[in-house]
Length: 141
Image (tube, rainbow, N blue to C red; front, side):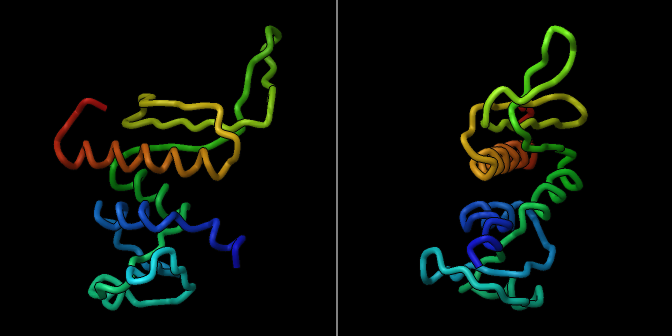
């Protein structure tokens, strides 16, 4: 079950995504009453969005699709790469980076995350920040 849980956004990020208007079905949920309680459970949307006791647990793939489709924000996580003088690309170490583009323009990139999961969560947090700013009418990003 722990490996499967890695495919879902953490509870706080899932809640932020839902508050930004995410309305897809969720395969799992977090229980609001018990901190960190995670259950795999198919709920229909009417139960999920009307209940005060559960938060839909958004899959990372659903989250990245949501930001691309609703906010025109593309992002990805990859191993940190470098380019040799010859033009070939290589992976110099075991760190990860992420890239974020909005409307076809680079918004940010960050490097030196020790794990893929750490980079993915940081990237998602940046997507949430950008989407909130866009929703609230701020254009600084």
